[in-house]
Image 1 (cartoon, rainbow, N blue to C red):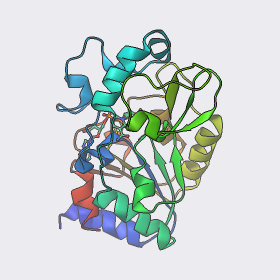
Image 2: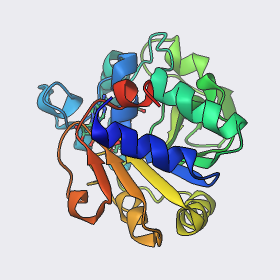
Image 3: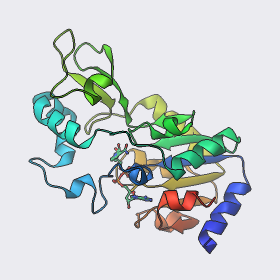
Amino acid sequence: MTEAVQRLKEMVDSTDNIVFFGGAGVSTESGIPDFRSVDGLYNQKYRYPPETILSASFFERNPEEYYRFHHDKLRLRGAKPNAAHLKLAQWEREGKLKAVITQNIDGLHQAAGSKNVIELHGSLLRAYCARCRKPWNAEIINEGEGVPRCDCGGVIRPDIVLYEEALDQEAMEAAVRYIRNADVLIIGGTSLVVYPAAGLIRYYRGNRLVLVNKGETGADSYADLVLHEKIGEVFSQL
Ligand code: CNA
């Protein structure tokens, strides 16, 4: 165990008020590509940039093209939780962790057993009609092809926050509350460039802010401990 992992272990052992804030990098070791790594979705070539395809106005104008991308790139294909998801669920069961705040839309924290999960960007495991708002089982998207349609003729969409859309206010407020009151805040697998989620870090008032990210982030200089390692590999040692 490296010295940095040992320090993280001591922080974790010393408190029962951990809050975790994570992003796509938490799920890459489960086989789901992130957006901004070299092998992430943003470095692959499409007819439109992913930020455009994943925007509300594009979805509305061009559902066929949106769903071509979605079926190709946003299907979860049986992904399973990895050591990071499992460790966070274990800490919650042990009464050490108060909440997982995630930008992910893959449901893997819940699959690992976490209960208090704040999903800032929604979930691919829920769906609803964009016209009449009727909820649908997400299987209609995840196991179908083409553009899924509601009884009303509207397009069914995944319950995720697209670019240009606002985040759920209650989820943001809950995230701020947990972060403000956290003793140890662990941030993992996020490039911290997607706002407003990335701004949450500013609400932390403690002195044990830990960053576990493969690459550098703009917040490295704020953190009390930085590990540039794979999060599943780090968490499996804790
Ligand atoms: P991002 O911008 O793609 O950044 C991911 C970060 O994680 C990068 O800085 C990587 O260096 C780092 N990283 C990758 N693998 C690991 C690893 N094994 N251990 C540690 N660090 C790693 O993703 P963000 O979450 O910051 O951006 C927010 C977007 C991405 C949100 O809107 C998500 O909905 C969206 N997203 C979610 C998923 C998912 O649900 N699994 C997948 C892809 C994108």
